[in-house]
Image (cartoon, rainbow, N blue to C red; front, side, top):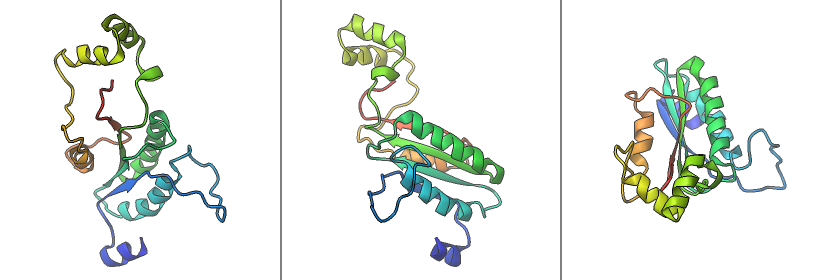
Amino acid sequence: MEFVQSQYGRIDWAILDAAPMPHSELVEFGRAVPPGLDGALLALRSVAPIVRQNTQGGAIVITATTPIEAGPLELAQFVRAAAQQGSVDKLRVNAVAAGGLAPAGDLAPPWFHELAQQAGSERAGFDRLSATPPALARLAPTGDIARSIVSLISDDAPVSGVTLIVDGAATL
């Protein structure tokens, strides 16, 4: 970060990977955040001061492209807290979580369990849902999340504290 600051002074946006930090017996970071988000916290603490130097505001997107220990609710809480702290400096913090965070299971609303039972399986329930218009969003068949990340960085989408859960499988 010192190099970036010395060369550029500030950055307008950053994309941080929430990949879990490797366990080390030499350093104990404590549990300031849910398991799996300590790497994202350290990256956010490093890059946020440089993004804050942009007087027009800036954007940080945390990506979880591999399964992390923290579930989607913990990730969403982490992002909302970071966004609230960054709002003073017009710093938008959002996240895109790509697959592997949670199956429908207990996160599905009660009406979905009934629909799945009527349809014969969760998959058949999702098929029924997908046949009902209008769709809110469509995921590219390749599972590319780049467009989601770019839209959260863009000044055209002035949202903060949002976690998009993008899954190649059917999700609610």
